[in-house]
Image (cartoon, rainbow, N blue to C red; front, side, top):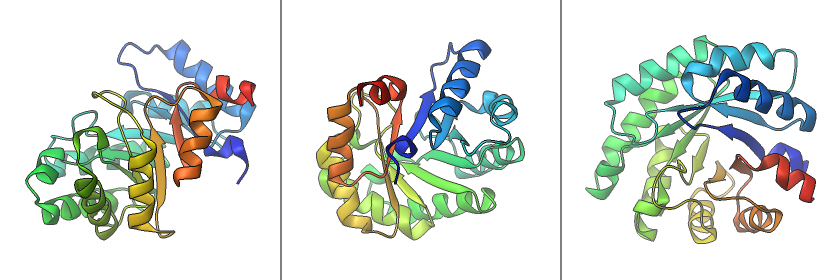
Amino acid sequence: MEFNKLFDHTLLKPEATTAQVKKICDEAKEFDFASVCVNPDYVAFAAKELKGTSVNVCTVIGFPLGSNIPEVKAFEAEKAVEQGATEIDMVLNVSKVKEGDYDYVAKEIALVKAACHGKLLKVILETCLLTPEEIAKASAASEKGGADFVKTSTGFNKGGATVEAVRIMRETVGDRLGVKASGGIHTLAEAKAMVEAGANRLGCSASVAIMNEK
């Protein structure tokens, strides 16, 4: 894989403006990143900006808490796909993971996966809130539910991606699913460490800086 295709060039700040979203779309086209990841209200705009390029439009569902009911997440995902999203990053229900209700987690993911109509689904585990055992079990439940990727973090909680979390996720899903590291990746060294641990996608707002550093 080309290094530039590791990156989901990300802007999820609530105060993000149309001009700022256009800027990350322009940067993504320049560097030919894997995707641009934006909030749902900017999906249609990003899809228009990136039309005719190889850059995917990614958005977030049930973000950032994951506490919406499954039917709401599925509706949100379906609308995003209708508006041009080609990749969906959903936050799973962290409280159900903490309670050990992995059947709920898998069923919720399956419902959202169906609503994606074949588009790529990444499941955000919010690993900073989980034990190593919970990370492994949540990864397994994500695979059972039909996810294409497991992802570390929203970037909006108390911690982001760690090498340990990425390694556990990769060991659990093998080569059957992708692993996305996101949250707190700001340097080339940090990016390389995540890849060495098993990540094959990186969610970054610092994608351009890392490319320039390389």
